[in-house]
Image (cartoon, rainbow, N blue to C red):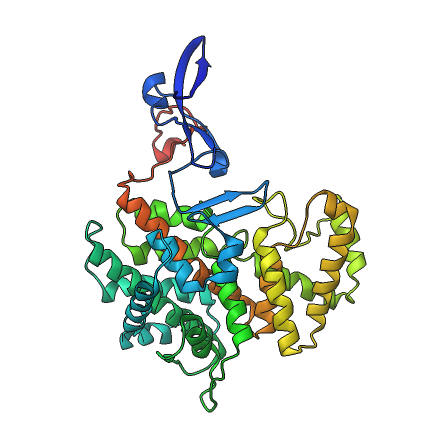
Length: 428
């Protein structure tokens, strides 16, 4: 039996259907509200209580600390799959078999060449340019080299667009880093895996040889998996709404990069390191800063603890905490910043104030620690996030286009001036 919600406005009642998801989530379907009520809409700043779409990609339950991609738990995927397997799952709906996986990887490698003219665009940026600005611009520039629009009803055209951006995006990300670092650009090695090859493109010195480290490769692989998708967040919603105008995949992903760039979204792990550096400059007294965090009158915020969606422990943080410890032990780094991070983590997990409020270390806390340990500068952290989120953006764009969703066009409630007569400039 269809569930119904009743709404009463000025004594008149309206019935609205309730949609139920496969995990029991309920939503009031208001798409006919304005038409049936003669113009009444809803107001929901930030869309915190508004479902913008039906999606079969990611299930997230913040209260219970559950995250699943296409029904598979994030814990199992991070333990048993690699990043390209998870990318395939997110985009195409099922885990690949050996033949599908080999073809997917080969096709991505075949599309990893970036047109030499892209280098000219990169050369136009100053060395000080932020990597996210560079990455967004270069991703958008790919349109000029692939100008034909994708026929979304053609599986082959969709597939080629997907492997093309998966092949080129790691190159552009690595180039943004090497531009910032003053290093010669590197094209990588087709004999390496997707993540290992990215690390080579990032870190190979012009006069040295790249040596693969399986612990570092595994840690980054897990980080990218954990960032693969996260339901309708700011950047993902941006990709979908830009794509709803039938903008192409490259343009939509470029818009997602810009949305992710904001410090309230993808910049959180960078904020963690900046906070740790500030604590170090002030003497490194973590107890002092824990007290400041508990003081309501103190503007200090403890970055990397708690999560707006997860009201329990961030399931991704449990996974990456182990990887962070493995990386730190492998590299044997003696870094006071990382020691401060460990002290903050220990105190927060034992302090009743944080435990009672479920303010546990989140994925941004541990990812920042790993990136710093690998020698990745803080301004590159969000670009690393974008690399992980790419499959999710692709999957969401593909789903939106195949579902023939209408162009995004939110309503508003006008609170400006009423009608006014125009006055000539000499009479004002």
